[in-house]
Image 1 (cartoon, rainbow, N blue to C red):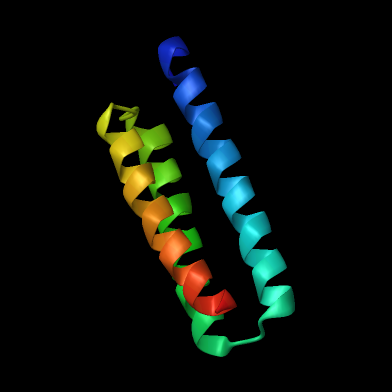
Image 2: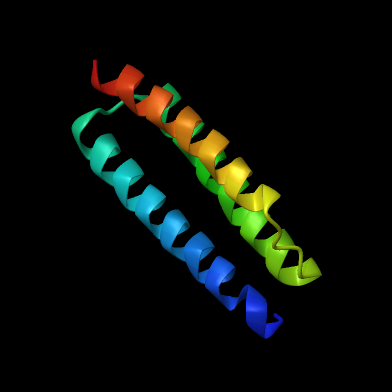
Length: 83
């Protein structure tokens, strides 16, 4: 990774770890197989993006927009699971 992408890669790592922790906490309280599958796909999608960004050195401004969209999807899934 180029030096100027280190901050963005750190943000991606923190985002991924926080998301996995939230998913594990929610799955502990709400045991639903369809929710688990949806969360697994979201986590794999985010991990795959991190690998692609790191491999091809493609950390651009659109990455933040993508994280906002994914975060919105995660919020909808979590609200649906908890209500």
